[in-house]
Image (tube, rainbow, N blue to C red):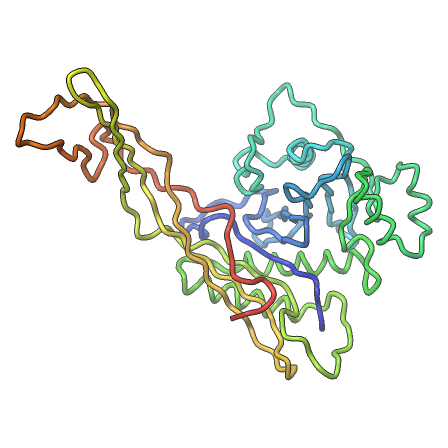
Length: 357
């Protein structure tokens, strides 16, 4: 199997808790699939005690939308093995998320898992747009849809429409020639379900998770193609990004600033509490001799909580030979509250996405 499109599966939340939690439904996965300029956020059902992906909300990445482009597409998994597709006229992805939340009864407690960076609470005054039928990159009631539906090269037409800012979505799976959109969505759902079945409690288990996910993804046939006689080194499948390991190496950091004040100077101390987060990712890869292997990469990032500001505090001019004292201690002097663990990073930077070390 050869899959040349760059995919990314990520878990943007902390490792699964060891404390039993009653199953609820529906929910939003902390993982996501990153495919070209679209983020696919999984929605799942765990009311039966087993995780079943019930849909994906595809959202255009920031900075990739032109003009009146479609910004969100909702793929719903039906019980008969087919998938329904919906979208909106709105150019606000937040409104699309709220529309899905209301339609499926997803509570506000799941908001962080959308990774939207926006306030997603549904207020009594909110009345988001209802979704419309969608197919092959256009809304089904679009005047150009009849032309698209019979076009021999729908992918090229949709790409052109999206580039000129038309109300279209250029999503690769909507117009593939090697396999159906439903079969691709099935494979994506299987991958997410496999990843969510693995609990991450530390760095080591994170690597075990991503390698296991990469194995599953490499074994799932999406668009099988015959292998060439010679191979181009690189990835052959999906990036599986594991759950973020629990925070470690947490400590206070302090900086001071001085200003002129009557009779001397004034100082202000800025305290931040920072922790280190680690996550790993794996993907199936191939060498030039066509031998295969699993590429694994590790990323370590530091995150800090909002600053605690102490001051300004006036200090009189010292009498010689005394000097200005360093006033800030190693922990906040104006607060007795315990430190707040900073949230894990939302954006992670990685080495080259194509070639492995």
